[in-house]
Length: 156
Image (cartoon, rainbow, N blue to C red; front, side, top):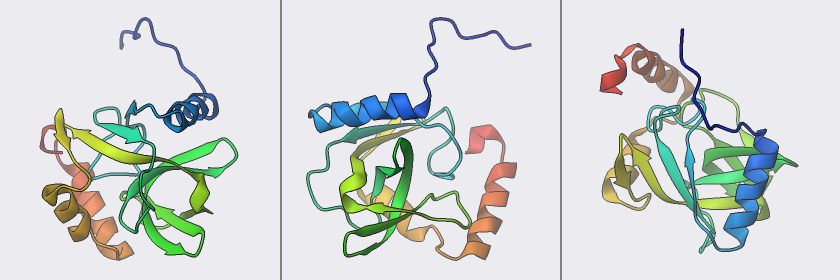
């Protein structure tokens, strides 16, 4: 039996991320613990963190961003395509399925990524290298994600 975490408040994502959106728009940075598996293998559920800031440049293909894809519905995914004002996003851990939003609905840009308590810059050589190597093809992605899920947690 697990012991409940004390002094924890749970909020629906719509409310919590709506407030994060407001804080970022006001010029503050926001540090969020990653929840979910859509950014595997680079970011793990409940272990890693992202530091988000107000976008200072036009988003580009390859950037991981927090976007509002529908009113009150947010995702932290990588931009895979930009066509005019339409942005297509996909999580690194997703084999298929994409989301779309207007470029103006990108709420936050990645300032830092904290993986296994080590901080990475999204523009740094190592992070760009990992991102470029991650396969774009669904079959290869599926195989690598299946292997990743079977690794001991200490290896991830």
